[in-house]
Image (cartoon, rainbow, N blue to C red; front, top):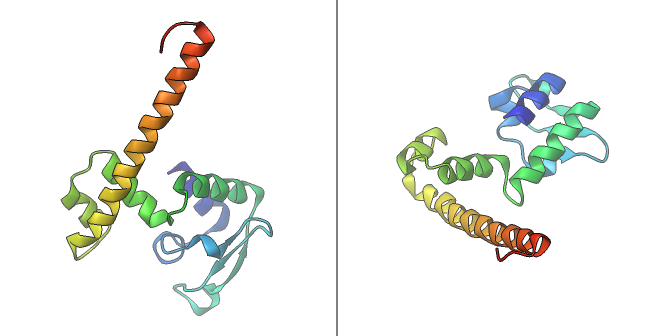
Amino acid sequence: MRHVNRIVTETGLRVYKELVPMKKEDVDLANATVWIPDSKAPSGVAEVPLTELAVEAFAKQISISGPYDLRSTYGTRLSAGGVADEWVTQLLRQGDAKVFKKYSQMKLQMKRALAKLNRKANDQRGSRTGEPA
């Protein structure tokens, strides 16, 4: 959430109309700009320059979200955090619970990845201390 706060305070983007629907391809970190294809006002449809802090916040948020868009990341993190399926569906403002299947599959993938990371960390710790992991 701190990255989103930083992005909003550094860019003035409208949270629900401009930032939430944003796709990664709208963010150009190399040129420090974001493209806003839809806005509350016609003049809001524009390329917005980014400060160094905004570029850093976008980069960190994108690295957290991996290959998924930010909305999917939000749903996945809710699910992985133990939020009930019905709540995730409501928080994503989905009319159909079928969409939740996508997030529950991502949750399983996240759990597998975390288990793998934990095994690697334990193996490395054991090799440094000479004790079995």
